[in-house]
Every structure is written in C-alpha cells, then in structure tokens.
Length: 94
Image (tube, rainbow, N blue to C red; front, side, top):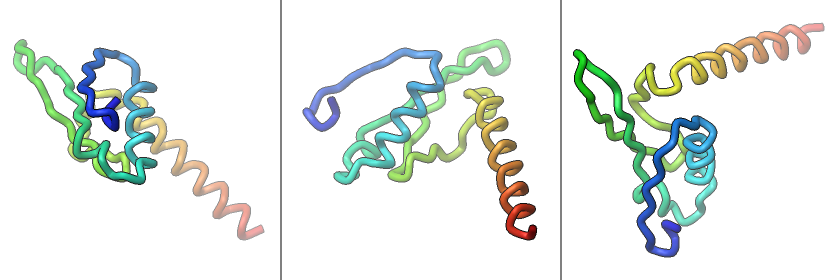
C-alpha cells in the first residue's frame, strides 16, 4: 500500500504483524518503506497513557525498542540465538 501512495493504519497486538513489516522493510529494494512506515506503541507510565513513536530502519531494526513492547519475545529470541551460537562453536571444535 505504501508503494501505491496509500496511507494505512493498522491496530494490532500481534508481534508477528510488526515483525512481518520489519522484514518487508529490510527486503525493500526501493528503501521507500523505512521512511514511510511508523510504529506507535502505547504504554502506561505513571498511570497515564504514553505514546512512543518507533522508527523502522532500512535494515528492519527498531532503535530504542521499549522493553514492554513485545520485550519477552525479543529477549527469548536473543537467548535462542546465543544458545545456537554456543552449539555451533562447540560443534566446530569437535
């Protein structure tokens, strides 16, 4: 839709949709998606709603990712990658 010049607003609680947008942005050869895509995250700070605007970089990363924004999933993914790296290193020594 962005490539067609359309504005789309999607409300979701799905990390899969957010991650799919990140993957599409990283694979976008026009580099048009990263400058035209935003993620807004609403958190509660001191019992009041707080809106965070998160940029998606050309490589699909989101700098300053708030921990409470799918934080456990990101943490588990990082732990899995670390464990996999250890296994590869151990297997390469055998």
